Length: 244
Image (cartoon, rainbow, N blue to C red; front, side, top):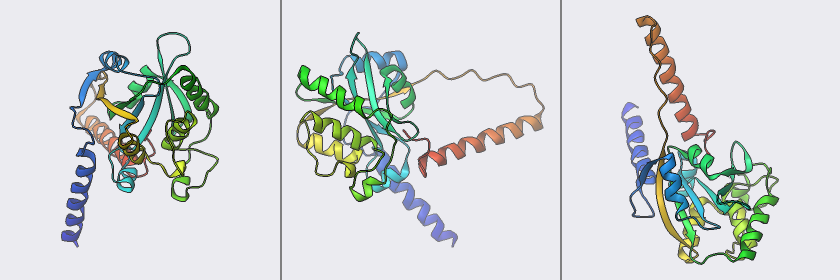
């Protein structure tokens, strides 16, 4: 029994490493502090740029056989030089965030930026924003990915696919069946998008408070912290409850 369990764990580890370690792109993943990551990204963003996440959700990775678990789309602020990120997230539904907040939230996952091969014209940019805004506040749902039928909620790649269809940049027979991996494959094969930077945002570490408690208290508190961290990792890997 133990030998079988060990074999399953080893096979599972190889599969997971293959999914997480295989990159569609050959570029180096940059690790940059938040302020530097902002400069790097802002220097290459275009209206309609996409952000693909290599998140922790194991069920998505296994089902799609890809390391990519989430996708978002970027448009410029209506006024000013900033950028807004739209996505449909598990904990939030359809929302929009500032680029700064979104990069901070993405840490420590690796995120890949892709940019339109041809710049959107002003009409397309406005239609894209309107299409994205129309869905704000809609619930997140993923069950329609299995059936191909529309639901009250909407998942991340369905949301982005619909927005790209609205500006005649993409065609899809069943947007609910589109996953981050299949969307990525489709836009690259059709030469609609080209790869940009891949990065991880490094956030400053919180200072560790000085511990004055007894040895027993330290062991107990360290055990609780370790257990809590392990539980959080499992939530991200299996039920994906903390995933974007």
